Structures are given as C-alpha cells and as structure tokens.
Length: 193
Image 1 (tube, rainbow, N blue to C red):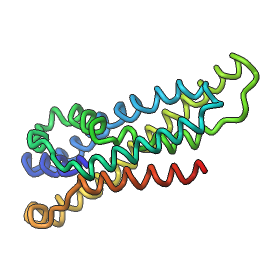
Image 2 (image 1 turned 90 degrees about the vertical axis):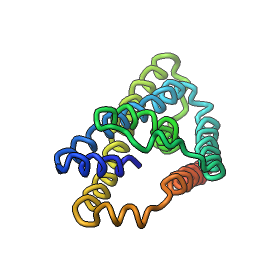
Image 3 (image 1 turned 135 degrees about the horizontal axis):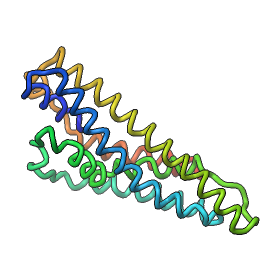
C-alpha cells in the first residue's frame, strides 16, 4: 500500500529514479516487518503437536485484525506525507500496524506442516532450522510480490495516469487491506480443516 508514496516521491523530484528508490526503500522496510512476525512462529513450530491449533489461532487473528480494520476506519493523517529518506521506516511501521506481517503467517504454517515428531530434541532442532529457511523464503517472496505489484501500480499512475487521475479516482486502501486480511485468514482456516 506504499506505492502512492513512491508516486509522490517521483512527482516531487520530477524523476523516475526517485520512484525506483522509493520502491526499494518500501521493500527494505517491509521485509523486516514480515520477518519480525514470521520468526516467532518459526520458533513455536517445535511444538509440532500444537501446530494445527497454532495455525487456526493465527488464521483467526488475521481475520480478527481484518474485521477490526474494516470496522475502525480512522487513519492517522500524519502518515500520508512521508519524506523519501524515511520511507523504509514508514514501510516497516505501516506493515506492522496494518497486519501485512501477520498475513503470511497462516500460509507459512500450512507450508511448514510437520510430520509426527517423537525423535526428541534433535528432530525438533532439525525442524526449526528447516522452517527458519522457509520463513526467510516466505518473507522474501511476500516482499517481492508486494514490491512488484505496488511498483507496477506506481509506475502506471506516475507514467500514464498522473496526479489528476490519482486525486479524482482514489479508492480506500484500508478497505482493500481489511478485506484481504479477512480473505487470507479465511482461506488459511479452510485449508486447516
């Protein structure tokens, strides 16, 4: 959802290079937010016998956050104007506050579905090490998808549609975010059963 800030940076500097720099800064802030949420769940996966309950809880948490964001439409105005040097920090904070870091958790837990582990501590250590690699992969793939889709929107608006289109046809990204959280949580919850 940070692509409008990339467009803004390019329009303020009158440079397409600023758009690319802004997208890189947004991705640089988004990746640690995703990782900060995924890695605690990676550590929890050593409790393999509770994995189904943890996955259901994570899916319900994502749905709950989506419902909350759907019902509480207040959005702080000071987040709308962010200078380009602070985009990575903004991206990290926005991803944490809006649930982007939480969104891949139920899917990640589904990817890391484990087999029965009665082999003791060695098996748990192997499981955690393998799942940490999967967590990194999920965080990187999610961030690349976010940067690519947001980048395509930003380039399209900046290059062809312009500021006039953006100001006249603005949609509510909070509504899209809330509905996507509910959708991902529901899909993840359905996959558990």
